[in-house]
Image (tube, rainbow, N blue to C red; front, side, top):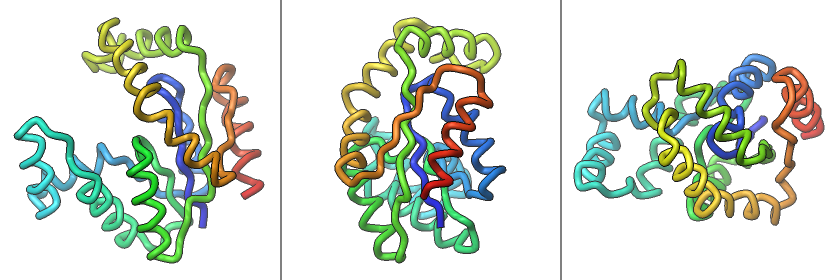
Length: 190
């Protein structure tokens, strides 16, 4: 079973590459954003718990997020594997994910990190903002903040997987097909 963490800063191309990887390898897309929307919309017990924290302006605790991820994995046990998108964002989440997967007899196959220079990230996000409708794709200050948060808070997750020998960095600049080919070459070695 392939379980891949696709990693990189905002604007690195994770969404574009995820779609192609899901199709090629028959993976289940596991996005915490989608899970939040599902649980909040359906009013599940995990959704209600998450909403309580969100209403107080607090981050949803890792155990609630992991609970949502675990439920999704159990619902789709016939999957060829999962592509984790936007998760884990912290080392604590990575550790909790590893523990949860281990309890299910699974593990992360590898982390593929898209490496893109900051100026190109900003350019891509601004370009995406012309069509995405996302306010945070159109505001220079918000773009800079998102990249800084990634560098300060999320980047250490790469070191966590590197220490396990599971990190591969891919140059994330070039054509979509060339980058996809590089990613596929890595996955085919798992």
